[in-house]
Length: 516
Picture 1 (cartoon, helix red, strand yellow):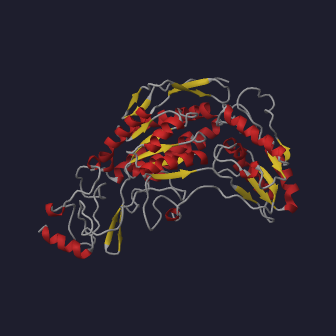
Picture 2: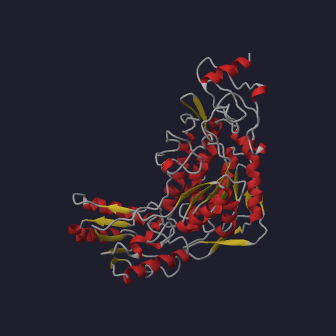
Picture 3: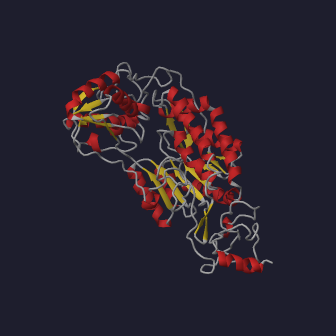
């Protein structure tokens, strides 16, 4: 197996490489145990610099039109597609994804997501009439993003693309276990026309960099994907500055097979969804719930199908399961397998031993248990980073399933795609397709100009109203607690951030007379 090395010489802040000052962190290839790169060990000062760059870049970026931002995103997606092989090799080296999956799912899917998000620009309701009022949806500001190691590019693209489309800027911390893709993404973004400071990358650990991002007073929102424990800490730290927090945490998804199912097809599909990416997927199907009367048939089918999942060198095109993402994670997974046997589950395939012929590397056999107690650790424990999610659990039907722990606030439940909720917009943090994902920050409230002094940009609610963006001097009052955030005047189009024009029709006509 040939091991490539990668150069990451510094953080990406304000459109340029900034050297770290607190040592480095090794990036280890889980298939070989060799160090393939080193990244800076970021500090709170590095986060301060990145946030300052993002804050400075926000007004100009937010003042651009959605169509311009969509064009930049399309260029970014094309840039990712053009560097597919380079990115795929980096992902395979940093977290062990089989090279075929790295090309298709790890790189191909994120490139498609960028194109899909860009397509929302024309149809999204940037402004919306509600009765006699006009709701203006605005970017929230600076978004802090923290991602896990299982899909290094897809996770950040799903946060970055909608955030940029909405006019936000970002400070991003990749996982210290899989940080190589972040640098390539930053280079592609710059080449695509993303201005300096709009996208910033700070490497480091969660305890230092993640904590600083969560607590920073000039970051307006945190978007995090990862373990439940880390999500709890982020929520706690972010509460001190009352910032928005969007969390995608762990789960223990159940694959329910009913009596009349096509069992061979159902089992084959179930194993694919359980073993894909080594089981290191938050949306995996690690539990198969089947009718008790058909359990023996399902177990036999599952064991036979599992034999087709070749474990080995992730650079080999024939490999279907590579190593776990790190040696520490391998040990965690093995611990869950051993715990399953201790708790009384019947091991029918695989086990805690290394796969035959693989004495080095973070390799684990694909493993299947039957007769699993629903309250046992392998049936109910685990999250995005937990070993129990990495191996399917087969148990007798009739037990109560465990719901995935993806917190969704009541006002987010109608979000089937970015901006789909008819009641409110949302802040850009993740890509479309998950109900808790949000695309645009709503105006703080639907309120009349007379009640709250604002800086309106008068826009007609009906044809024949006040044209363009004329503002009478008598009507202008600052309503921005951060004057540095206010963008420069811009041509007619979607209202700029910091400008809220929410007027009743009668008030609109009265104001219009003042302009004549």
